[in-house]
Length: 579
Image (cartoon, rainbow, N blue to C red; front, top):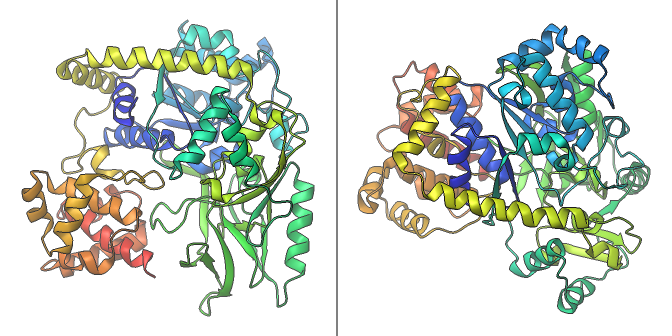
């Protein structure tokens, strides 16, 4: 199933399990859906199964949002306390759509407790009290972890996977019966040979050729600049401290800022991959811990080396493995609810990266990693570790055993069911007339009290949402746009030549920027005759941020069209890229 098909289904208000292999664009599809809802005046509840995952999405953990906390079971007394907690009641009743990210890490028992709590607060007998629920994740990835395990960061029983443990084993899943959308396209993976190895592990069809490819990546010791994977924090801290102490020069320490309710701040701190006190030296091996949505300069997992500190404010200067020099400004992690920030922390988005745990690598895509899987003892353990790396050339193995190449049999069997269910959904969707599909989507928005049409001039979620890490697939349309722009044509001229809307041409340029196939000099002429308004917009972008268009549109009280704002943002981002 394509992202567009999955989005069309989400927009009808269906309960959905959105899944697919790493790099298939699950997060991108959900973000497009969230943008689509917000453009129509509906604010979704965005949650995740763990604190680490929650910090990636500026949301709550599902435990906190639903009010169940760290409980392992719900008694009548517990439910009574939840339904009398006004804060929980207000957000659960106000929710229109509930998104739960990293569903693979939510146990069957906890999944059932969340549903029970939602139904108790909202009333009625239908699952989740009638909420649209979107479950996102890949059961081949990290397995369930209890809330108490998460409080301890690693949890000694993290890999102890047992029958009936997964969310799909819960009776709630059967009653809930979500529509399965299994994304089949690959946007991140640039190494088809490596992708073949990963797919073979998922399907249980590892051949002698696949084993030979892995054996060829043998490396007893980690090379310089390659991150080591360990099972526990103690080993990671030991390696990182030792490596840092061996470097000459003065240490620089950066303290985390904290704002908001103490309990929420503490949860953010536990989930943040950057430490409360970040200690660095020139020459330190570091990893970015957050996606740079506005500037597209780095993603969560980008590796580099500290090459200096800025004279102006002392911020670290990082040279990435790709040779790009980046000034690492402080970033913010926050908990949002209903568009309002409840708590936030601010820290340099870096951590020492000579070593890291597999658990803390959640959500990362690494250029290279060294790991020893010769003692792998649980199904899926090897797949989770290996799939963190982007290419086969970036994988270094001290060893591996047969268990490292095996996935949990329950998941493998269930995955076949999910694929078949998604295929049937795809066939059913193809039979729905466009007018009928539009009617279902409009009815869904009206039922939630939203506006069927987005703000005038805002365009669609497709136009306004910028592809970040997933813009890896080449398109002939991009090539045509690239040729037109380099030939000095305006956006309008390129649009006429291709028979497309100007907004589509701008989207092509945005994607080419992400792919680093375009430079500032290529598009500088696009602002000709608009220099003054572009400069004003860019000042607003510096003040308000470049992630959303609407605040900029509102700043100019509608006098500046969205296309001009997007053009100014393009030039703003190319400046950041070439800084």
